[in-house]
Amino acid sequence: MTALTLLGATGSIGTSTLEVLAAHPREYTLYAAAAGRNVERMEEIVRAFAPRKVAMSDVGAARMLKERLQLSGLTPLPEILEGESGVCELARDPQGEYVVAAIVGAAGLKPVLEAARRGATIGLANKEALVMSGRLFFDTLKAHGAVVYPIDSEHSAIFQCLPESCQRELGACDLKGAGVRRILLTGSGGPFRNTPLEDLASVTAADAIRHPVWSMGPKISVDSATMMNKGLEYIEARYLFNATPEEMEIVIHPQSVVHSMVSFIDGAVLAQLGRPDMKTPIARALAYPERIAATVDPLDFTALSGLSFMAPDFRRYPCLRLAIEASLTGQGATTALNAANEVAVAAFLEGRICYPDIYATVETVLSELPSLKAESLEEILDCDRQARESAGKALGARKAC
Ligand code: NAD
Ligand code: MG
Image (cartoon, rainbow, N blue to C red; front, side, top):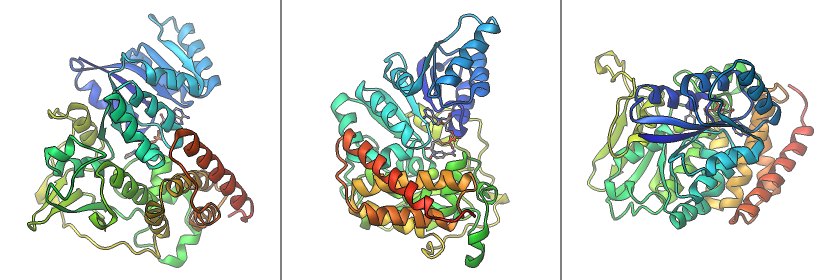
């Protein structure tokens, strides 16, 4: 029986993880669950999975949850922790042997580092944490004997296509030694792949969230539309697989049937295929090296109408170019890129800026804060704070949409 700590339990990945858990009640149990402020959903999770500990980063939400559970007479009540420190305390608890890191954005960084510091096994969905901390994250894992498995579907696909020598050395893989020529990171191109460029100025948050293939949380849905998501994944893949820029290629694949590929020096290309359902990479990360059922149907190849692949157009996806450039510049730039993007996407979701302003904001911040040092956690958090401030100012100068 593996005891799980689920960070980001009320979100899209959190929900998919609980579905996999529910299919394997004898193998997995939910020990602890953390989230931001969704009290209703957390109450449902407590009733269905009876975790021993719960944390809400929003203090008011934590208190409301406690009150609701007490009033309902539920026994035994879970211990309820509150605030960012409560989420970190939960991540630190060694009884949660396996930690699924599925908080969205920079807020997930400290808790995942806490889990790494106590040598936990980590299933990583929270790509922003890795984009911000890269080297520090892997150094922390190594120093404390912690292990990470990717949950992001592309990285899970790449992981599955790589030989075991690489799977066992994430962060320090010898791709050349394993005969790898290139990692081919695929992306659907999002909902605006065919929108005339001149119409992008007037697309709305609701349009952006309507992803053609995947159903995900609001922030990553907007990131998929701008392809900033693929940019963050490019940075994530470089860290996870120790890949040079020459070993990386991004390919648009609208059907999202191939989840990414690895090309080898002998001309072979291995791909992982499947339905666009996050339960598959979650099950892979939870059970490695075994395989467990994920309640996902296999692909029906006779029903596929065709698979297409093309190079990304940076005029349509300028955020992707920014992310690749930031990856070449270094950790300070990728941390600033991530922070500026989070601020800009939140403003776009609230209807405060237009779609092209997301790119403009991130671009302004990166040109203002060219290369801050971001090696220690303090430096990373400082860089994140400065970039958020700079993004706030850049947004203030824009007209409402
Ligand atoms: P979501 O918005 O659906 O859920 C986010 C979760 O984080 C919620 O449980 C929320 O309560 C919690 N949260 C937010 N702020 C918090 C805070 N300060 N402290 C504690 N918890 C907090 O997002 P999602 O789509 O599930 O994505 C989660 C992560 O997984 C993101 O980093 C995303 O990039 C990554 N990811 C998601 C998918 C997907 O299909 N949804 C695929 C690949 C990777
Ligand atoms: Mg992905």
